[in-house]
Each structure stands twice: as structure tokens, then as C-alpha cells.
Length: 161
Length: 63
Image (tube, rainbow over all chains, first blue to last red; front, side, top):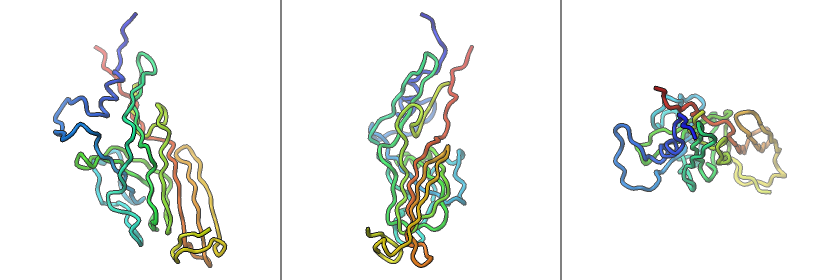
């Protein structure tokens, strides 16, 4: 046997479940999973890696009707993060919502192209930004289908290389 | 088939139907439109994301 330097894959998975704390962390009221949400943003907004929390600035608003509610939709979180070793030096921790994000009876005629995933339990702190081709919706439905929850396609992945 | 439109529910036989898709490295998107006398009265979109944000690069420092 030999020893191999590496970030531990289990650690990456545990980052996703708030097991480790190297600094100042929020006091958790429960051990249950947080509530995550998905909000849509207009193509004219500025949502990127520097985004730290959900904001209504640039968020999609209804052109007519009430199909979109500020704050977006609650994400279905039916599967806990998984951490998998691919070798002695590499591994992946990943997580994917277990249902699509969907808005129906929606009319938004200003182009939007981004969804922000954020943690509504922890002061709406930002998690990830996902972009797609600009879209408008007229008296219709907008659906974002989740990728397969695997080491290579999961929606959120932390990986050593 | 009844379609929800800006004019209320309408039979699709009264409407012009257009649809299309975008398939690239980032997404697979399909869209469906219904038009009435040159006016867009329904548009729905279904996006499947393919390319996720990259978090790769974590490593442990050497001594």
C-alpha cells in the first residue's frame, strides 16, 4: 500500500451538508436540509459568480397575470448529496434537485435567460447561476428540466482532479 | 386540443402552430407557439440544461 495526497471526497460531500466549519457559521435551528429556491432573471440583469444572495433586482416580473412570484419556486430536494471516489486522488460530490422547476400560466415578454439557485433558509444566500438562451413566455409554461444526478451531470458538483 | 392563449382557451384548429428546438453544448430547448391573425397568443418553452458551473480544482497542498 502507499499513501496518496488528495482532498478527501467525503469532505466535499460533507461541505454540501455543512458538517465542517473553518470559520464563523450560522447557528442551525435544525438538522434537516435547508430550503432552496430557484428564481428567474431578465437577460439585462447582472447575476454571476459575484452574486452573494437572492435579490429582486433584475428578477423576472409578470408582463400580465400572476404566473411568476417574486422569489421563484421552492426546489424539490429528495436526494441528499452523494460523494463518490473515482480514484485514489479524485472524487466528486454532487447534488441535483429531484423535480423540474416550472412556471405555468406565465406571461413574460421581456427576455430572461438565467436561473439563480439560493438558500432561503440561510438568508437567501446564493448557490449557483445557470444560464440558457433568452426566452419569452406568452400565456404558457416555462420548464427547466434537471439533468441526471450523476458524477458528470449533476446540477452541483464539487470535484478533485 | 384546447390551448391557453392571451385570448382565452381556444381550439388549436383556429391557430397557426409553430415550434422549434435549440440543441447545443449548453442546453436542449424546445418551444411551442400559437399565432392568431399574426399575433402571438401562446408561447411555452422547455429547457434542459446540459452544461453546469464548474467547481473542479480542489486539491490538498503539498509540504
